[in-house]
Image (cartoon, rainbow, N blue to C red):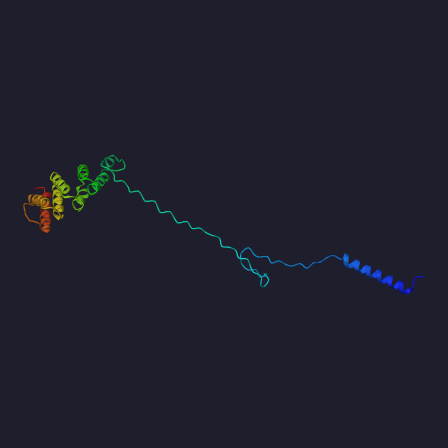
Length: 216
């Protein structure tokens, strides 16, 4: 017969085995460690634990390429006499003004400038004041070409002859050209005022009144 003490020990062993089995079979519940989520914007998050470092975002490398130097603007070629005369877009006055630019261009040969002036004189009939007078007043016009204009003016109306002579007298030019203009002014007015431009202007004004008179 089993004693009372043996039965108690057996019961304790059974209870111990049952307790061990319960502990062994219980589900594991490991502690979950939260990992901070770093925002992609690079700004620190309010949920970042103290002491945790926020990884820095490397700045984007921008390469600035220096601008290429601007290409030089090609110089506009000087038109030729033939191209001016053949240009359908130019009327008579337009062609004459383009020729006048050639006449005053010191980069051209005197032969080319003389040829341009010859064509200009043909186109300037009845437009002498607007086309030829500015040339005579230009310091870029050589005396030789001024003399050509003055000589040709003697075949045109008296008013233009007088204006051309006065313009030549006002130029800083050689004595020979001055003498040519002064002698013709004396012929037109029957007076002689030497180098006095004001006196010559007055004499021409009085002469114009006579030229306009039907009795003259």
